[in-house]
Length: 359
Image (tube, helix red, strand yellow):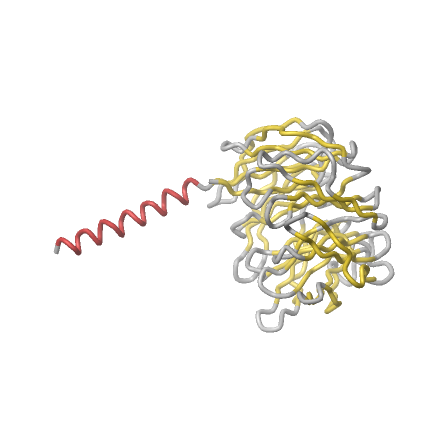
C-alpha cells in the first residue's frame, strides 16, 4: 500500500514538473522593419496564437533578415542598407541587448547559423558572395569573416543541411544553385563538384527549406512563381531536380514574384509567399512518395515579403511589406489549411518575421 502511494506521488510530481516546465517555455516574435531603425517584439500566446506588443528594439540602421542560434540565446540581424551584421543577446523577457555590429559587405540579404550555432553564414545580394563569421561564446560576431567566397549576383540565401556538412546558395540573378561542403569544426566552405546547378531561364531560385525527415530540398522560384523540389544525395552532397509546381492560379495574369519559403516542423506541409497575388501558397508532402500536392492559395496582406511558422507548428505569421501589417494564421495540423485569426499594425515596411521559443 505504501509503495503504491509513493508511486502515485512520484507520478503526480512528474506530471506537475512537466506542467511547470511547459509553462516556463515562452515564445517571442521579432519583426524587422525596413522603413524604420527598429525590431518590433511581440509575445506569442501558445494557445490562441495571439500576438501582444512587448518591446521596440532600436537598431543602428534598418534591419532585414533575422535568425537565431539553435539554443535561442542570440539573435542576428542583417543591416542591408548599411552593409553590416548585428548580434543581440535574447533576454528572458524577450528583449534584445546589442552585443556588436560588424562590417559585412553590400546588401547582406540572408543570415543563418550553422547547426552548431558557432558560425554565422551570410548571402549577399549585391556583393555577390557568401561569408562565414565566427560566433563567440558571448554571442559576438568576429570583426573579420573567417571566409568570403565570390559567387554571383543576387545570392539570396544560405543554409546548411541537418548533417551540417552541406550548404546551398540559391541565386535569383543567374538562375543557379551553388553547392558547398561545410566543415563544422573550422567553419570553412568548400565548393562541391559541380559547384553550380542551373535551374533554367526565368526561374530565380530565391530561398530554400530542407525536409526534416526526407532527403529533399525545396526552393521557391522568384521569377518563375513556383516551388521546386530537389532530391538530396548526402553522399555526393548534390541536389537534382525532382518536380515543379506553380504557386499562383493558372488564370492569374498580373505580375507576381515569390519571396519566402517555409516548411512545417512535421515536414508535412510547405508554404511559399506570393508578392503580387498577395497570398500564401500551400503544399502537402505526400507521406508515401514525398511528392508535392497543391493546397491552393490563402489571401494575406499585400506584398508578403516575410513570414514564419512558429516552433510548435500551430501558427503562421506573415508580414505585409506595403500594408505595414502582420497577419496571424492557425495551421490545421491534418490538412495544412490556413485560417486567418487576426491582423495588427506593426510598423513601416516589415521585412522579416522570426519566432523563438525560450525557457
